[in-house]
Structure formats: structure tokens, C-alpha cells
Length: 220
Image (tube, rainbow, N blue to C red; front, side, top):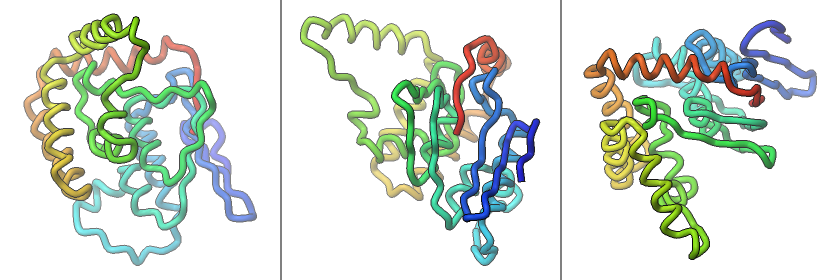
């Protein structure tokens, strides 16, 4: 099946391989709500075993692509060409295997635009590559202070409330097992969004609108 013209393309091959493509290149494959729902349904359809029992809000799980990827019993290979921004980064981390071209970019802009991670990015990345590699840099001696200033200035340009919240959830999560850290991330996310201001919401909308002005990129 190939749902051509859709933002989520699904192609099934007789040999058992199914390719699911995020197809919104003009917006750097940034995800909008209908795409998330379609992606979740496409992933769910890959599993023929309906015997899994999940204790939680099934309505939310039905339309949550990362939850469906985690529940899928079949291996998922992520092929990244271009940019994997924020939600796309989180979807990439939910894959069992990642293959990326040399120029692929994995970018987390949650803090910059005041968006709280809800699919495990704050916990998974530090566990996959270690907290030091997730947070730190290695540079030549001559570039030490220059890089330190660049990082400091980049942090200052972010949403400062989110910077503090992000650091807190990363550090607090390192003390727990993964299951509890993912629950912690969702809990902190709900707390944040329940108190979000109109100004923060406007910045999120500006971020989404700004993606469409960037160069086309990736397939996953």
C-alpha cells in the first residue's frame, strides 16, 4: 500500500519489509498533529499481535507514534537523511536501529522554544550515549574559551524557564530506572503546559511557521 500524496507514506513489500516515510520536506518533516496520528496508526498496523496488554490511557496510546513504536514487536530501522528536529529526534530515538547519512543533523530545540519533551528525549539520549556526550563538547585548546562563550550565549537565547526545567528533569531522571524517568518526563511536561503563557505558545507557533522557510531535508 502506498498512500501517495499523504504526509505519511506507507509502502509494503511482499518479502515482509514495510517502509514508512515522513513526507513533509518543505517543512523539514516537522510533525503536525494529523501526521502524528497517521504515523501512530501506520506503526500499529505493522503489528499483527493484538495480545499486548497496556495499562494506561488507551485513547492516548492509539494516537501516540512513539508509544506505538515502543509497543511494536517488530524491529524498526530509522533511516535519517537531513534534519531530525525535536519531535523527529524523539521518534528517531524510538527506533531499534538508526542509519544516517553523513550530513544528517539531530537537533533538540525544546528549550529554545519553550517546548517540554514528552517522548523521552530528556532521558533516552543521556542513557544511549551518556550524559557527558549528550551535554558537553570537546575542542582544541585555542578554542576553549571561545566555545564556552558560544555555548553560554546559546543557552541565554533559550527559554530560561525551560532551561532550568530541562536540566532538572535530566538530573532527576538519572537517579531512576527508565520506566520511572519516562513517567517523570510526562509528569513534568503536564505541569509545564498547564501553566504555559500566551507568549510561550506564540513562540511555539512561530517556531513551527519558521520551519517552512528552511531548506527541504529528510526522510525517515
